[in-house]
Image (cartoon, rainbow, N blue to C red; front, side, top):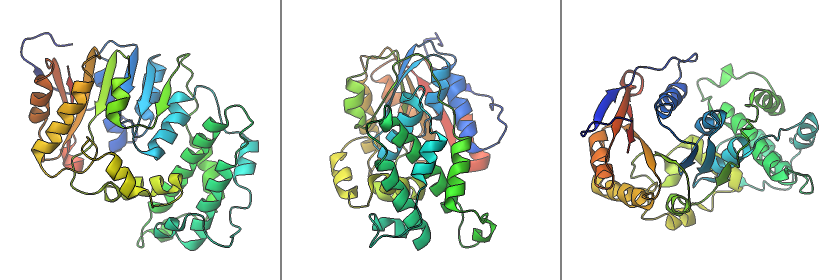
Length: 331
């Protein structure tokens, strides 16, 4: 850590990555900063995608992952909490059985917002097959989460095409796409630690953690309702939950907390302050912020500094590609 009395702002060099994608670049930046810190356990209240948690498991850190979204919890359960379970060929045969056979009606009519009728039947039947995974089998809960994760990859693939690009979609049955996604899914990482995944609000999760490090990836500030923040994330949540009738209750349950819509900058900063005050018992913080013109890194750092001394601020500029700038505040 930086030891100067004043916080140091460090311009991180672009981390090399093979794909050149923003996702990989962001992940490389986060990992490069965390490499500088000393910790054996980490708590992640807004995990999102599980890739960073997998990296930390490879470093033999114990990872406590959490997310308020059920789709993110399923992926953390599959890849962070899980140390050894994998979907087998036998599992696949059962999961992919009779997926194109329609019933009297869709169990989840909301799927028609996202997919054609044929594809909607496939996703609806897949989820039912996943839920019917033999509960008497050891690790059945993990297997369900693994299957849900692969199913999300198939849906993301389908939704990556629009009216102009749909002709580029390979003429594959979705069951074949599922098999390809299964083959390319990351192998389980066994770090011989009791990693966990939970689906709670961030504040109550943090209050119960006993970890060396808090890695807080701040949600982007928005005045949009949760269901409108991202098409990608909305379809996943509605598929995993089996419908779209949960949004109002979910938003009420999280009202007044970080991760819900805000009207002003001051309101967002107050939510941040309230959350990190809950983490005062954790020895070290690494707070990741995406600067998009609404709230600056300096304002987040000032908020953090009111509770704990800021040791360093690491930044990486993605503005040429996205107009965004990433930062991690260490305190």
